[in-house]
Image 1 (cartoon, rainbow, N blue to C red):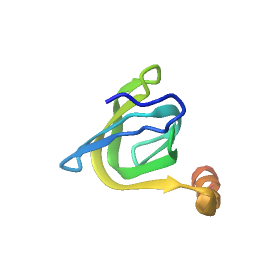
Image 2 (cartoon, rainbow, N blue to C red; image 1 turned 120 degrees about the vertical axis):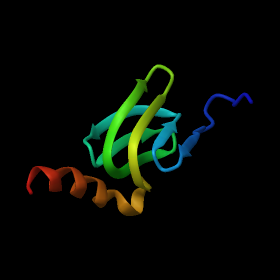
Image 3 (cartoon, one colour; image 1 turned 90 degrees about the vertical axis):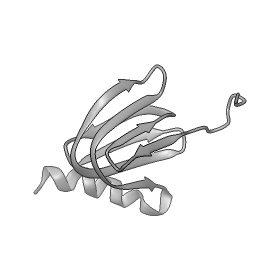
Image 4 (cartoon, one colour; image 1 turned 180 degrees about the horizontal axis):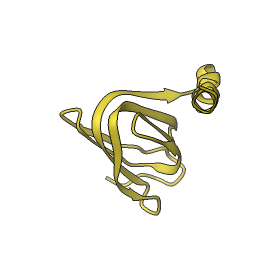
Length: 94
């Protein structure tokens, strides 16, 4: 299926809460073994879990593959913009 330029397109595939493939990724802002913060065509996306690690990264193709135990996927929109900065700075000042 082809998508016209300018249209947002993103696919998320999860298998058994252990592997996650995400397309439409333009940047990986931060990551550790419990949280990934990804900039996608549809907004910022946080992936939270345990023992997370990046299996594959291709920003040219907009693809990120993550393995581990996945607990949540959350998009950060305008109403939760404070959550993003709290998460990043909260880790620095624990």
